[in-house]
Length: 627
Image 1 (cartoon, rainbow, N blue to C red):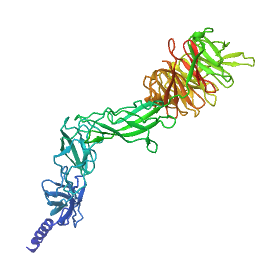
Image 2: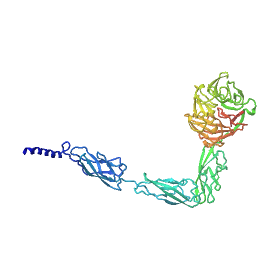
Image 3: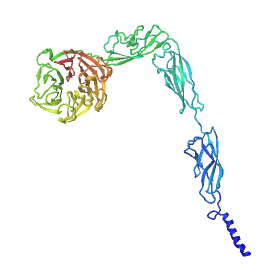
Image 4: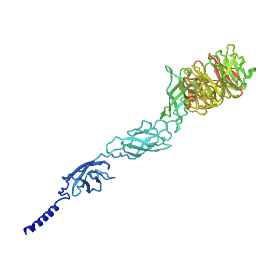
């Protein structure tokens, strides 16, 4: 019996042991996790980690975390225990400062849970400033020093900045700190009789957030000040005007019909107690004070300030008086050759040059010759080969004559005619292989009607390539480049070098500083080209006949241009005018008008002494002598 019980006992023991072991024969210990707390800013994003939940396992098993109880699905946790906001979720301290969730940790067989607390940290949140609609009353005569304070508030105490986003006829200004005022100057809409109520939108900003409000300005009727069409007026007069000539008038008006009086409050003093200008107190006519005179050489501009009053208020406009130069030396005009003198014809005289002996060389276009005229009027025809409708002509220090031809079987070419000891000339092609536009050396280059020509101090020849609308440079080695102008493109653009454009440049001249001046025929202007190729409009730009300064002056189809030894510039116009330009002040003065039968003046040059101008007309050479 005892032997039978032993096997039974062994089996029972195995069963009991099997019930208390793992698969590998060892007992499992559940993981351990404690309650934990994390802090997070309410500004945290769903891509940032809030922290890592920690747990332990005595058996060293791999642990996996999950959320057992969430708070409005705000959070998520990775299997590794990294806690974060669920996608698209945010925290808000003002809604809830603490969130509690239950996190479960498992070792694959057993699990444990703990409460996880998330404390929300408050972030200072900016609040937009507050500005309400406001209304003000302002006199229609208010000026820029009359301020209105626009008010706004900010609960965060931030510094505020004011701007106008919708103005009323651009009448008002506002400072950064909200002081509203009227813009300086005259605005017809700031008038009770015209528009008694103005509205504008003012925006206030704390640097981050903005707010806007409507500001209403109710104008209060008042005495209307005198008004003028142009508050700061400019008048231009010649230096030789008499003291009774009216220089200008502001033509002031008064909306209330009040009688106006005029006075000069800031004048130009001539000597103690003597002013240069006066004004008629009832008409407003400005003139020179009795026995006073202007002098361009002393001052080219004067400024005075007026007071125009209606008895209750006044305005103080400014008058700028520009003085134009007058040639104090009168000129005498005579026909030197051709024309009504008879003798040798000058049919369509074009380019003109003066050689070292003072003789005048003329390109007579229709006669296909170059004629030489002495200062006393003796005419000879030079024996030069290959002259075909010549336009341009220049002579260098060695007496070599350069002629720009425009026709014949060779097209537009420039020939050089070199004299020998006997005075005979040897003719040779200098540059250009025919008509067209191309840079290059000698015959590789092409021109299209070479007209005005001049030399610089280094002996390079500059050519006004008329129909190519360009200024070309030819070195002594016969290398041709485009110095200014966009070859073949007509225009009126300033710029550097080939970025600039011309429109039929007729003639060119170089001043003592090496700058080039161009008679830009169809642009009615004189263009200046510096040695670096910078092109600007120096004189004119608008067709007309008005002396003045710079681009305010008006000229018409300039055909010729030359300098005297004092860098005074002279220009000939198609309308018969000869004008003098002081290049320092850019002041234009008309010297004389030379009537011609047709087609006006073609070109001009000055003698070495600067005492005589020689002008080509359609059929003659005219001398303008300074007395």
